[in-house]
Structure formats: structure tokens, C-alpha cells
Length: 242
Ligand code: ZN
Image: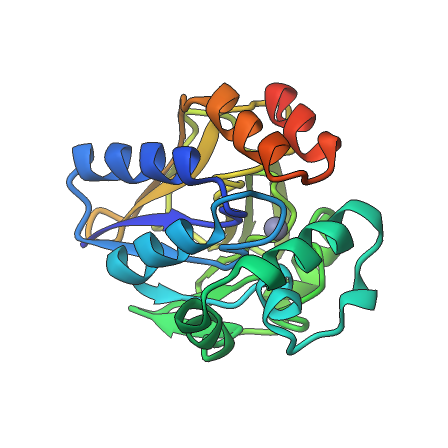
């Protein structure tokens, strides 16, 4: 089975459409989403509708939970809080109900999916070797998929040794040896210096993973963010992916 793993879409419809088109071209059987469908971006309803239609599993991220009111808006500062307040006002009731019913952790075909980390599925960022080590210790799953940091990462544990780091476009991994913790990066707001939409192609039969990046119409998304009156930084940062 071939799977497209998406995470951190953040209301960026143009990036989501580009990632799904690339996934279709790669002939994937399923789409999995690691959460943060909404927050920051100006097209939360369209992104919810498309993920509902296409994803066979979708998690709730911290932004989703703040926007639907499960978590308080005071959890966020500045731009994230302003954007969450905007999304609360604009999110359709059916999308609010859908997001509110999503799990924060799931298992699919022996793969563990979490937004943050296995020990804190909502909030913990896995961005260091120590955090990755703790994350792998918290579960027995051979393959763990995380989102939340917006940084594409590939970490591997074999013979008690954890190694790896940033996963640039085109990085390919053999999943047959040892355990892995992978972050596909962010579809809608990359923060690893590559502004293209990030996604992960997982081939569970061949036990291979490939980190993918795809161009999208950044200017169109920026124009929508500005037109909605959302914080300028949320538009500006999309140009650099940082
Ligand atoms: Zn996010």
C-alpha cells in the first residue's frame, strides 16, 4: 500500500491541492493527515472539506483543538491567537463538529500517527535527538509519524543508536532496518527553509519512504491571507518557508 502523509495544512488550500495532485500522480492508495488542518491560513473550510473527502485517517492538532474550543485561545500568543480567533468566526459548523471529533493519536497498518509526540500527542515538539529518543521509548511501534514542528525530519534507531536529522526534498529511506520516527514537514506553512509544500510518500509494501516537495501558488495564498486581514507575518513567511 502506498500512502501520502500530510501534516500542518493550516488553511492553505493552494498548497493542499498541489500536495494532493502530487500524491495522485504518485498513485497513492490512501492519504493520512497528522493534524493542524486549520489555523493561520484563510481557507479553513475548503481545507476541511478536502481532507474529509480524501483522508482515510486525520488527527486533531493543537490549532484544530484551539479553533474548535476544546483548548483555550490563551494557549497561543500573538499571531497564532489572532488567527485562531479569526478561524473560530469563519469555520462552518459541520467542519467544527468534524474537527472536534478527531483523535489526537491513531494506529494504522502498524504505524503510529501523532500530531506532537507519543508522550504528548498535542503539544510536544520533536526537534532534538533527546525528544526523539523519548518519543520512541514511549511506544513499541516500529514506525512513528509526527507533525507539529513544520520541519521535515527522519530519525532512525538501530542497535540502540539514534541518528538522523533534517530530511530534504528527495531524501529516500529504507524502512526495513531498525525503528523510525519521521516528520513529513508542513504542507501549508513550512519552516525548514524550503517554501514548497511538504509531504511524505510511504510505501508500506516495499518498506520505503520518500520526502517530497511540490511548488504551489504562494502568491495566491498570501493574497488570501492579506485580504482576510490575518497577521502579515503569516503571509510573508510563506515566501521563505521559515
Ligand atoms: Zn502546525
